[in-house]
Length: 131
Image (cartoon, rainbow, N blue to C red; front, side, top):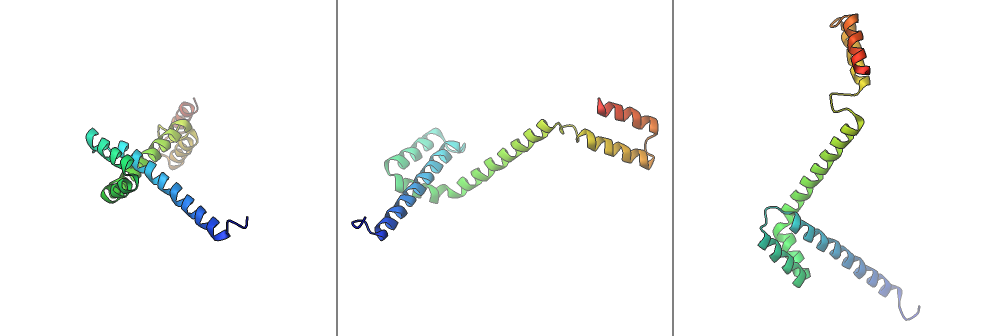
């Protein structure tokens, strides 16, 4: 261990970390190229070739030229994913039609209490909700 000082180990780890971060950025750029629907097929091919042939320069130029749109597409995709997830939860929980049975019964009891519906109407609606 004497022939590899601690500072060299630090520098090696730093360069390895930066290389991994660059790889993540490269993959992010490549996925963004394919995700962008405003680019034509030739433009996508051009950016992809630029990022493969001159990877450091290609990624840097892409982030400078199209970084703002890249962030907007990420935000749009995150919103769409969140909306789809929330919709799935609503469907799985069975609350698509305006609330759960418990919520509906509480609303009916409140209407009965206020006198908006009669006891007979309450019982009919309650039977309908519970069935």
